[in-house]
Length: 438
Image 1 (cartoon, one colour):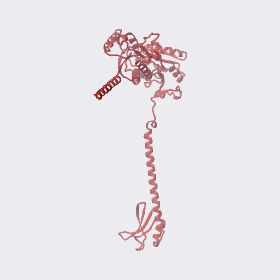
Image 2 (cartoon, rainbow, N blue to C red):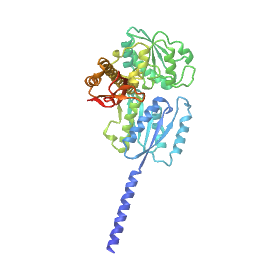
Image 3 (tube, rainbow, N blue to C red):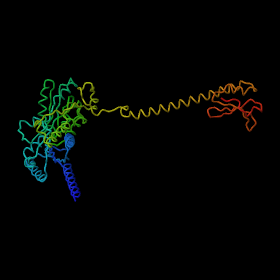
Image 4 (cartoon, helix red, strand yellow):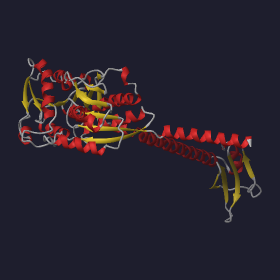
């Protein structure tokens, strides 16, 4: 009876332990990503990928992600945001959200206005915003963020170092709210170079007209979400057309443009920014974010260049700043096929060695045969067998033999091969017997 009670108690304890372990293991944290623009834009897609990967790898719990896109560059009517608020409030009414992440300033503005209605008592993390967009705004205690440090002056400085005779520059930008705010921020940095460069701004032209104005000068490209005719565009696609139309080098300020036609520069990396945002969100979920500043500005710029554009404009890599990363380098045949080339060369070498050895053996055999025949021909009939014995190599055996036709022949066995040579004649008693062997 006592044994049964003890076993039951042990089983119950084991079941409770397994249940608690499974409960802890199966805990799921729910995270909403709210984008101010379309998340399929290349820069935001890179940010999203690195943010989610960092968040998942730094959390012991399972992370469930929900993506919401405001897409304000295409939908910006006054009634849109209240309707979006009501929609999200209904959508997440029965879902406990552990953290809401605002990406870009419109998303933060939206959550500051309506977050308490949609996600009550939910911590907010923001990213993709610079300090000029944040301003002196006072943030609630549950809001934490990583600020972008957008820099334009370093890229202009690099361009002037690579093209020291340049006196004029064209700046290409769009007319959307984001385009305008970014251009105003860029103009602050451009002001440091007014004595060296005459900046001309192309922002109000339709795209087709804009492309005809890019001639004989440096081009700096910011963003074009909307052109002067009001057409909505994708900046990454427009930079390709700008670079193709320009007959002078084009520089940009964002990592996603490298590979699309710009030379490069000290570009802003949203993928690196996404990593930092993911780390912050992980700390918020773990409850350890109180140990860091509520808002932190972290530089995430890279010295990044396109090898193909360097070749196009004849720019030497030695002129680039130290620590520059060069992408899209085209490898030569040796770099691309080194293992295959080495294997083919080794096969050719082995073949050549084998062929050389066979040729050497053939020449050696023919030389010995000639020596033997010469020695045999110089001897009289009565001394033929003695001559054979004295002139044959060590691995060669000679003897006389009568064929079916009654003729006397000399047989020579050399390296497993036997050859017969006509003899001048011999005694019947000596034929068929071994003359010599070594």
